[in-house]
Image (cartoon, rainbow, N blue to C red; front, top):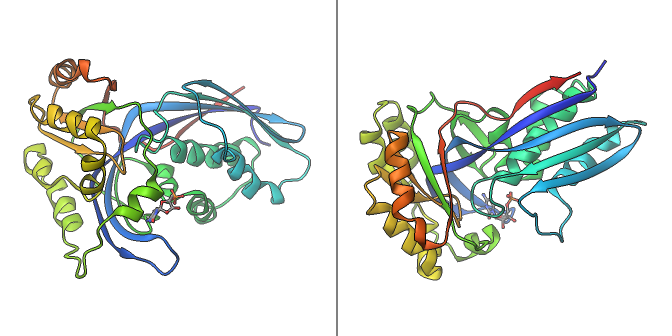
Length: 294
Ligand code: C5P
């Protein structure tokens, strides 16, 4: 028997490193990235229904247009589900299209949550494959924590948890298209390809002082010259005394990393008048987390 309702907490991510290595025959890009889950979370409440898929959203607005990623996730699962459905309430707190993986995390949470709710008994491999069909960032969130992802981004190797840290997230009010950013990225003729290895090794030192010098994001060369507001935030965070700062994914969020909450909060105060939405959060060792409700 499945449970009657499942609550899923879906964390955001930041990229501590991201290298674009080349174009792939399937139209995607070969990347090497190090991801870290953080404690800003969306929440899904999943309830069993007689049939179909119904979605209610609260919190931050989600721009319409394309079918919601959760509806696509249901469509992937649905051919194998007979005469049962799911009612979803999504509380959105992670800024949308901000490089924080919110939609991807929601999709991973939905797959794990519906698997539990309807007692579908899908294997880890099956869930990973469905996650990869939904988006390049989705598989990471099944386990979260600290991980290195290669290939299209769906080959995920979990690393030892990074030492705890406080993160300031600064999201300007602009959505940057990932497709656009990849299309503009400069592809090296002979990619060096060692950045991810060096960053992963530095993470093993367990000392942020040795890790942050290896932060790197190839999207900065595309996004910072094009979006002055992002560049300004990046410079201001750098000058605010944080240990390291970087663009997350293809943006628009930039983050700063500090060892204490006070330091992170003072960095947030220093950039408070630059028009970004600000969150002070922690790194987390978790991915999506389920709780059954009766
Ligand atoms: O996989 P996802 O749907 O999140 O990717 C969004 C878009 O980003 C893709 O349509 C593609 O244009 C681009 N992308 C890419 N290479 C990757 C991941 C994404 O070119 N490794």
